Image 1 (spheres, rainbow, N blue to C red):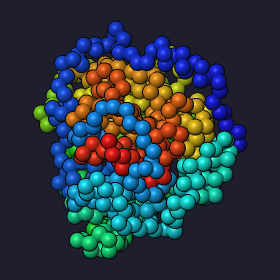
Image 2: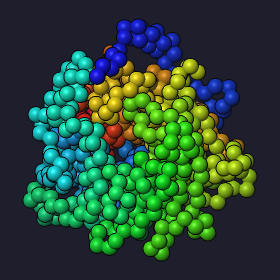
Image 3: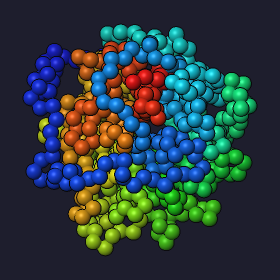
Image 4: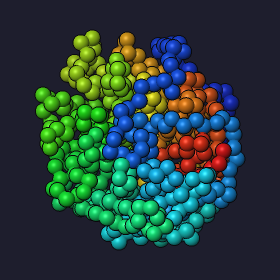
Length: 548
């Protein structure tokens, strides 16, 4: 298997382009002056905390039930050169989706594709005190093997593929079937998946973490959900039930896993590839993709009410179609959205929306009215009135750019939204091999964009774009205290880094540069910062703490 490597011509083109135009504000058709009137992110209305989660922040994937990817901790500006080998770390992987808040502020749960860990974080520490493997014969990868994947200076994708098969198995991307969405509840149970099995873990002794972790409960969801290959999402309702998603539908299961799940399958021509968002009234928002290239996807709102998953409009449920597209090259999956839906607008905010990116080659940011459609709403599509607005994303890239697409959810704070382009023009068949190749071996994607929702005009406008910023596969995150949004990318000059961009202007405010080591690659995980401002980097080789 031969894949296209970076060319000298590309390097020269990029250097010239980056010198000429590092970033741009909105074009004349938008209204960038409005951004000056936006309050600081720290004053934005936030989702209602879910009382059944361990903490208001970081106790499930995408940080909260609304899936906003926003956190309240301050992060200082500046440029920091960091060697991951000098940082307190643990080894696990290759996907270390997130490090979860527990009920004890001195500890966090390490959740990844090959194990569950308990990590001591008090007083600047980052020490794994206990770990346990996943069921179904899933092997814990050794530090030696993980170091081989991240430290080897590969010269070809074929060489990397061979090592990935040796270490991860015949189909390396199958490792992504485990630990892909995770939760810690208010009793300090940690939930994850081993393919189709939901697993609940707890400490052997609540007051003595070093005594170890036990697999407390497990249930195989396959027989209930039309035998999917894996699970693709998990969130918590506001009355303490788990919402589990597979390609075929969603299920509600009690946290004790002692009762049969309540299941709702979606139409046969649709498939779910990402998780759901939940509002405080137990509205459940999940997007499905068409199984046919170019077919329409569906945004679903189910309502969990009186022990039933309702699709009844009288209960507030609804469906609406959105545009699909062809199969995208590496990183992006499927024919529709790559986004877990994100809720926008909370409390007394005027507009209540749910947002995704669609499946078009040049994706659009799509907002749906999530409750009653306002009387002043002007339909974008008369046959699809749930769509409040949709706007094509440019990321500042040229009009000739064929693909602008994303596998990441839309990061949201207030009425601001942030999206990234992480599609490359050439295809690497295995998603794990692709995510390890892009950057060092394969030309990385570039382009990000910040948008704002106008509550008066009921439409999106673009605030700024950065065509020179790379975001490969990590989920972006927003510091509301510091008005920054963070991405993880790669450049030939500096290697891997986390880049923080000013929310209002797009200017680079923060850089943590790791260099050429692939330990600076976050491989589908989410970017986190700790309460004291340290970076908690969920690396392909395992999470580590960067003291800033």
